[in-house]
Length: 376
Ligand SMILES: Nc1ncnc2c1ncn2[C@@H]1O[C@H](COP(=O)(O)OP(=O)(O)OP(=O)(O)O)[C@@H](O)[C@H]1O
Ligand SMILES: [Mg+2]
Image (cartoon, rainbow, N blue to C red; front, side):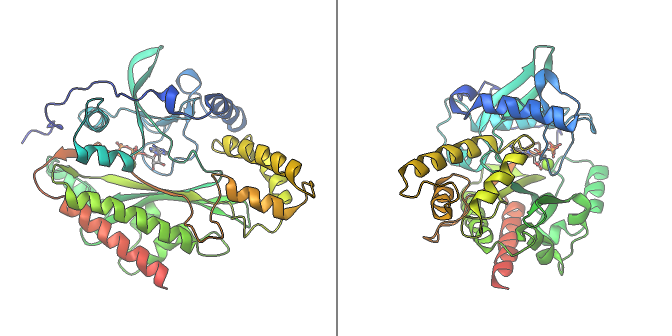
């Protein structure tokens, strides 16, 4: 079979979605990318783009030949990998987000993917193509992020024997476990810093240790975020339902990206004002923080003006405000916190006529382990 087989007779047309129409606060994003550059001294990419600061796995810009950037408008730019992988991923996004797409299966799939804003290239090097994608961490102030590769095989049906062996060597348990933790970063509330774990951490996990290994993603240094585990299970189940219906695509070496808010919830926050002051300090370093904070400030001001005791020190007013913000973790009605679980990395997606058994196996085992974490 031909190793360059792609997704069939698909036009590489531009997607219908206009980035300008969908992105929130491009001005704020522009500031954050430049500020990050100033403060971290990172090598600048094309046109003010910077390496994605919160990338947890995959090819890194400036380290590998290609990598992931953040555009000043806050979107993520994934540089096209060399053929056939890059064109295959481009073709996948173009197909799912085609303007005239009326396939209900693909339309449903859109909700599980980052939004796709067509391709992008810098005027300086117009042939260097990037996929312009929604940054799925953008809502969060202290995003905890985990990349989990799903499936029983990390190589596609067209891979050479050498590639197969190389992938199996990397994680011989893939077939049995059906997923592999590629990397994560977890916010430690007490230390106000992130713990990071690279691909070697995941590769060291066995059937006996995978539950505890995964559990670290949901532990904030103080307690297990059971609410986040529950919300994650619901999202993964929704993705599983899509896979149980569809028989047209098979995914290899593709990932799920989990994201949740690391900042403590309104209920946990004993001193709202203190937390506000602390946040001001990190404003300039965090790519994701500005929109949420400015929302909080304006809500805060509004409530102070309406309150009978209009003092910024009034914790009850502050708690009420945190409840309203989109970065809010959980409210008193027992609603689940905002958690993102999105499918990413489509360099090895192929047309098919059967269910994706390997991916389904991986999702089911991942759900089993998440449930065990919850039951402990
Ligand atoms: N849309 C996105 N929003 C936020 N972060 C993202 C997004 N896409 C990718 N990332 C970050 O970049 C990392 C790598 O992404 P991805 O898996 O697509 O690239 P890759 O593994 O280098 O690609 P490939 O396997 O095609 O070589 C992810 O683990 C995640 O941290
Ligand atoms: Mg990847």
